[in-house]
Length: 246
Image 1 (spheres, rainbow, N blue to C red):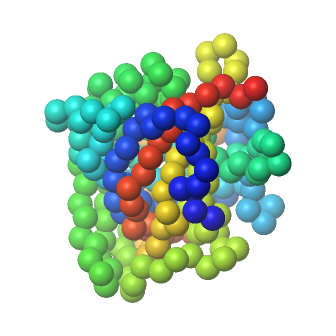
Image 2: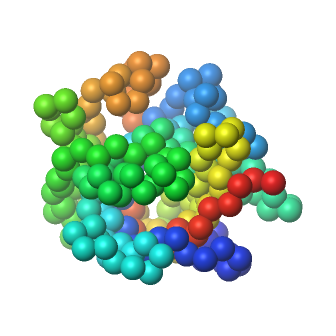
């Protein structure tokens, strides 16, 4: 599926280029995720398994409502997400819900929290990107409570489109975002991008105080080995303005 289709009714809220999305994917019991599922959606599972993903990537050439904000165009983001779905007008809409998103700029966190009720926090961040056409490595770091956390992996071979029906295809092809609003309603927005090629990744690293950032319930599942790990090339993206579910 290519998400750059038939979404012209809502104007763009944000445009950017996302680069080298490192995705570590973990199986989590559905009961631990239901509190995060917005009204009007349901958990979207892969082959009967509910997954969450730790994702780190680079936000580049960012514009909000067509405007580039000085010193806020290029930055890192790390987020923890889960996957949901809903049917609308005969269309199956598969989307993500963010448990928490980390960025290095307070203004970015404030805008996202104020307009979308997302769960952003602003922390010092940095990254290393040694990926070239034949592999390499990528790592994203953030400083929390005086300690550096990190998310990283090695990549190898050539980036290729994920195999149809694979876990990598399932993870990378959710084209909607859903957020629970303060009044109990749900905001839906579309994220447009072409299908991404991915590198296979190995030797994944995730070191973080999970309890303080994401909650004690997720400490155990995020301490296990990920069920899959890959790096998506990324592309230009368009995030459409959100609208409440009817």
